[in-house]
Image 1: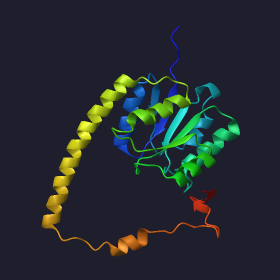
Image 2: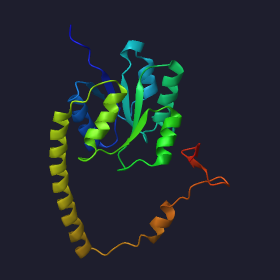
Image 3: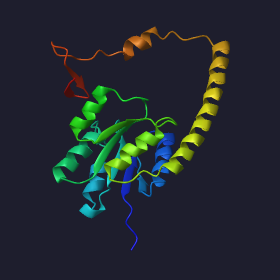
Image 4: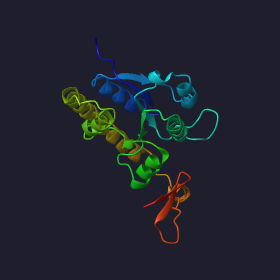
Length: 207
């Protein structure tokens, strides 16, 4: 009798990163389901029988509920804890190449098992290994090495094209004044008097 594949449910805002995760996880003999970010994930999970729940959930930490401004990652983690479900949650930030300590602390406080940065040729093997280890699956490294090589070649080509485009824009167009944008986008951390506690997404986190 064939062994049942473990299931991974994904939700991504970055299409390219989603495709990369799907391709990488499929090489690990996992059943990968990629849902649209408009899905209310808690309602989806509530309709599943316990044995139908995914073994692993990978989702962009910035995805909001379709009906409110609540982060779905928070709602899902709280629901899984309340149900005492075995599903592991890994949050994902495709906008960063390295996860900050405060982000990691926030995710763990919410109930996630881990939080990962965007995939790159350099970290693909390690990040997939972290994910498979959470659901007790042995890493199959050979196909991942091939994906990383191909991804690296494509990324190098893209960087060259982007560099050429930026050079062209610099020559043909005047530079915009970004002083006001920098001022508007900068937000100081909220700290306690002792400087040891900070606020992140509404949660007090001690460094």
